[in-house]
Image 1: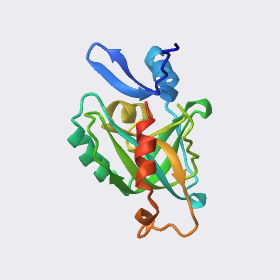
Image 2: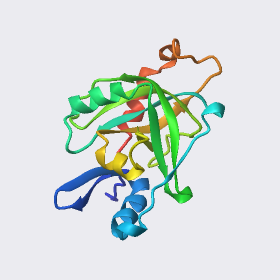
Image 3: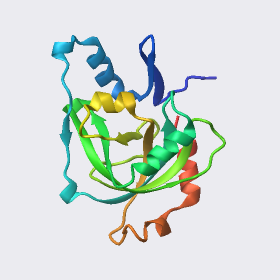
Length: 189
């Protein structure tokens, strides 16, 4: 029997008093940044095509940061509506920007994550394939990408997308498949 389990998210200890939850795709960026001398550290370039992006409904898991209570992370997620999200694309030295238009949060018995459906404006593609989730976080333009990662209270782990020409901010919740939201959530590790 093979008991090998792969996980997309892990706690990374950066110093004696700093540990953060990161996405496996962010590991190289965070590791390289922290293992470089300060004078050689560079930030990622923000990249966006907001004019050509379309509305997408995405499902996934809202994962709280280690040092934050879930209630705090949920409040912060609601505050992020109408703001910019970032996704680390380290292979292209960029942080791809998207807009969080709206967010619906579901209940969960877990203490560190909850299911969600979100309406976002993005050029990113999302996949249900295991370990292919994309991690989005609130992207504050006055902070470096690294400071955003270190200070983020939550990650939106996005693993499914749905789009249609007639999706709007006022009707998007009519397109949500609640069973699918819970199915996608259950499969995020």
